[in-house]
Image (cartoon, rainbow, N blue to C red):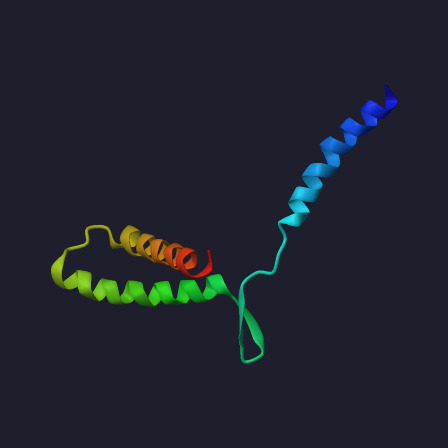
Length: 88
């Protein structure tokens, strides 16, 4: 009976710990002038540039009612899309 309890304890404690630790890996980073920058930072910078370009195009053709909500949301959508396309 004691061996069954020990096996159950090992299964409950060690298996989730092994699964959590097995997921660790090297994060995508870029070496720029000797410093490593995370990939999400690059995606965010490109997304901000794309948002500025799209703001210039949208202001010509469409009146944006709530720009304080539209442009940060557009930046987030572009950033997440770039991350998925480039680093999935």
